[in-house]
Length: 286
Image (cartoon, rainbow, N blue to C red; front, side, top):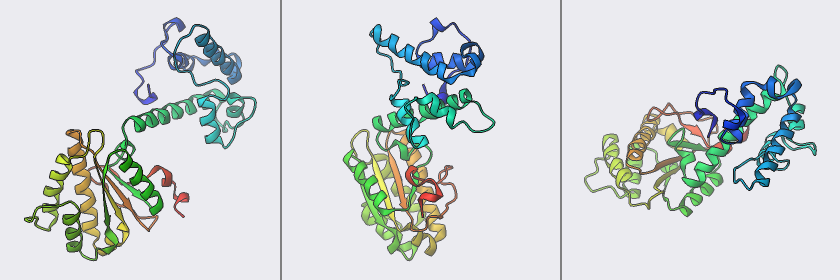
């Protein structure tokens, strides 16, 4: 279970532990009792023994701490390489001042479990990475946006591509949205009407179960420059409708490409507008 959802830790006998993470939580509670001198290499040896015991007794229980195993590979990616001595030595070598190797191990363990849980959810629920923290995700590179939309299409999502760079006025936006989303003839070409009609599309789209609708905007920074209020409100409407659609087990995802790598929007649907994971750091958008 991910660390953030772990029940309140309580000391228990090691024989009452249900899996390796439960066992590690006991070590976290009282490291001095388990690890003489705070030796992380002793912990590594202990976990290798744990995994050997699982194999000997044919117990199918995930344990990722073998040398070269999943945790070691994840750590190598995070640290930029691994040594032949194993993950304990790598953590000891990279422990920052003010911390200890054991403290650093548990900090990394929490990050590993969180990322693993998210990756599992992403595999099981395609597109969920664009709905966990926000319904509106920013992109800088058009190539990255194209790869994302193609991947979502492969998983059954219906993708609507909108070239926002061609919108010089709010009316241009309404015309394009009405055509792309097949709004009825009585569409009022105003933001209230957009909210009403988009709600129908979001909640009653005919995408297959487990998929949904993706609105992918390119050159949105140009529209935001021409019509800043409308650009903000459109994203707010989409985010609000996406949340309501999710209640009905529908998925509405909004992907927004901007040529301005520093563009910022106010929170939409009471949620922030965030950059995608590949471009989350400012240094990756330059």
